[in-house]
Amino acid sequence: MSAPLATGAAPSPLPPTRVGPRTFEWGSRTYVMGVVNVTPDSFSGDGLLATVAGRGGAAVEAAVIQARRMVEEGADILDVGGESTRPGHEPVSEAEERARIVPVIAAIHAALPQIPVSVDTTKTEVAAAALDAGAVLLNDVWGVGRDDAMARLAGERHVPLVVMHNREAAHYTDFVAELLADLRAALDRAQKVGVPRGNLIVDPGFGFGKTPEHNLEVMRHLGELRGLGFPVLLGTSRKSTLGRVLGGVPPEERLEATLATTALGIAGGVDIVRVHDVLANVRAARMSDAIVRGVFP
Image 1 (cartoon, helix red, strand yellow):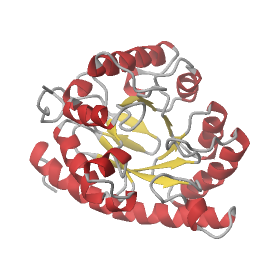
Image 2 (cartoon, rainbow, N blue to C red; image 1 turned 90 degrees about the horizontal axis):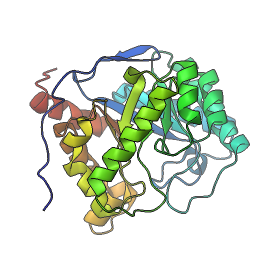
Image 3 (spheres, rainbow, N blue to C red; image 1 turned 90 degrees about the vertical axis):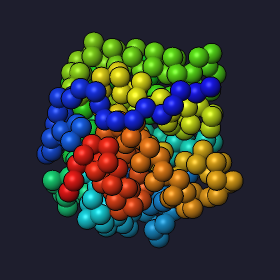
């Protein structure tokens, strides 16, 4: 039988992390990361290249409009990605990914200089170009991979790094133990190549290299993940496991399920939630913070 969901914020405070123009005081409240997908094939149906006529300037303009709205709704960070990570997605070349996201990051940074921008990529060359354009946080969905180039880049450029758990196939003997061991090893490697401990953020990789049952197990064991001693980012928004639990509903009908995971994630001690629907999740986070952390606006 699975262990019960751990509740409560971190047992001991973590040092703050500087992310570009802002300092994040872990434990003070939950931060919200808004997703800006500059893709034609996002699983969630919000890829800007699929929703604007043409590309280039139209996509950049649409991204800035979306970014402004998300910030008005309460987003603390904006996460920009140019390659879908959904199962069966079409691989994108380095040149294509750069062309998609670098102009968008530059435009968002110019329009909203007070908001930290994260880049969601697995390619170090793309990540470096994104940093040059104004990004201040690296979000690597293969943070536990053997290649430490992204961690080296984070260390060289003095920016925080999100280390996400992932596997090529969902094969585990002892899921929770292996999840934690994979993350510990990746975090140790990142520190050895120059990323300060205070610049590392952990993501359990909900939906990546895991079955739906594994994803639900992640939610039940967030307390153990928090015990690694790093801030925790949780990204469940609109993902397929939520649709499976609700009987096969499409991504655009998974808001209530996302809000449930946001609230339960905060009860489990997460520090950042990565979401598509910012306003609703900000409201869920504020209510959860009031209960769990005692933060009364």
